[in-house]
Length: 220
Image 1 (tube, rainbow, N blue to C red):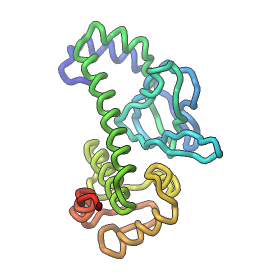
Image 2 (image 1 turned 90 degrees about the vertical axis):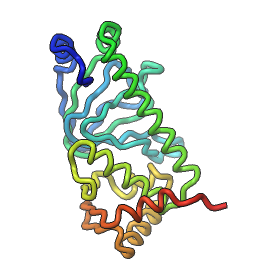
Image 3 (image 1 turned 180 degrees about the vertical axis):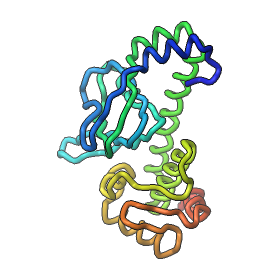
Image 4 (image 1 turned 45 degrees about the vertical axis):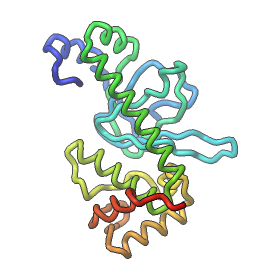
C-alpha cells in the first residue's frame, strides 16, 4: 500500500482487505471465463496463470509471487481471461474491486498506486512479448531467471539463490520453448559454471554472465 496514507485511510483499506483465503497447491484461485469481482494480494506462496489452447495444450502466461497482485485481467470485461493455479500452498488477501474503486475516488494516493500496479503489469507483458519475439533460447532463460531473482530480491529474498516452484515444462510453455530445449539450456549453464542446480534449488554463480546474454546484440 502507498506509504503516504493517513492512519484513517489505512484503517479503511484494512476493512477492504480483511478477508484472507488459503489456496492449496494445485487448486485454482479463479478460472478462465469466471466472473470478476476481486483483486488478490498474494501473502504467501506462488501461482501460475495460463490458458488452454484449442488443441488442449496449456499456455503459461505468467508466474506470480508473494507481494504481487492477481486478477487484473478481469477488469476489462468483468470476466477472467486465464486460470490462476497455486504452485504451492498459498494465502491471498481478497480485495473486492468495487470497494477499491470507491475508495480510490476519495483517496488519491490509493488511486495512483492502483494505476502504478496496472502500468507495471503492462510493462511486464510488453517485455515478455519482446523477449519471445527476438531472443534465442539461452537469452530467454537468462532473462527469465534474472527477472525472477530480481522480483524475489525486491521482497527481501536472496538475489542469487531460489527454489523453482514451476516445472521445466511450465517454464518452456511460458518462454515458448520445448521442454528438451529448457533442460538442455539449464545443463549448458551448469556446464559453463553459470548455475548450480540441485533438483528445484538453483544458485546463480555468475549473474554477470546471464546479464551479458540478455544484453547481447540481436543477430541479423
